[in-house]
Image (cartoon, rainbow, N blue to C red; front, side, top):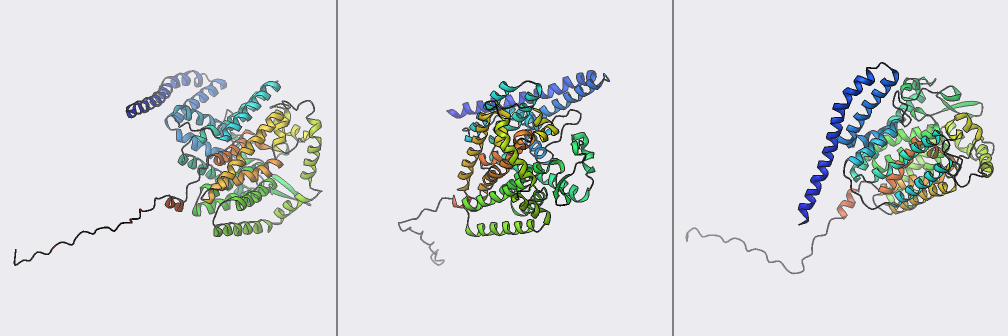
Length: 496
């Protein structure tokens, strides 16, 4: 008796989707001529900009409603390949605009509302605490703008966790392809573009600004020589380290066969050339966590150990990389001294701002010179406190704890790839987030962190073939003898 009701409900939902798609088409048909006539025909720059923006917006909404898969694919690739690219003429981050399209797709199409994940609860607590801190500290529009950017990036975890597992795996693979594309471009720029001029060709997409140092290149001072660090479309080498870390983690978790090997070599090589110590040490801790806690066969464990030894030997064979790593343990290291000084100054800097922080849009977060002069502590939980107060910092730590708990859960599952994303999150939380802060201060980097967190919470790894076979039911055992049919009688032709 319940089937007709379910059928009517399905028809109603389908009709709702069709109505919304039709509404988008009608809007395109009716509004576009008006926009073209008024906005583009006015000849004014503002009119041209508004006209083009409305056309692009209506087209994006139509795509999000009619073809929702493209919203997710566009978000995954843009976030992985060029996270800081902006919409030409508008200055809006493309990756964050794609998040908005994902939300439109999620609202336009019925999705299965399963049980709320523990990570989602902690993210909601973090958002609520951050909103309270914004209300308490906002004094200018920049505060609201920075909060909205961060909120858009953080909120994408909700529609992603409600995707079917196949679609979520597709999203993760496209993100890996995006990071692979960005890594190839960055490697080509590192080896072939000695002046850093390639980035000037991407100026319409927001990559033309060289900052206060006057070049797109970034350097590491190794004695008397300057060593170029890989950046590409990630602008900063430490940020490139974060994206390649997430990309490498999802490569090992979601891809198989030659595709995994090739992309792991490309993305892993790019990660090493960033000379980002936080990223490299995060990989080491992630590998140790995977080997210690993940359930896997002995031969698989030996293979992973051998691969780690080979990768470490190849990495340390490069003098600049070896110097960069071993300088981390030297008291004369510039970065170590700056971190120590910032940590000792942190209590005094927070005086009178412990409850709600110093604000979301302060100059330290939006101005390169002010941030350098402030030298605030390079630690993500502490920067969360610096910006939003003690409750925001505690909520951020709560998100990391929830992710670690789910990582341990996944480590008891098969296949062994189920624990890779969790191991990556543990390594990143224990090392990367303790030595750097872009995940907190930059919405595009927050997006990469949310992608990794999503795959830890969802455990969207494809089951192994042997696990599928083991799920088959055994054949029943017959205790009683079975009577076989009698053979057919031969007919005597003479009697016939």
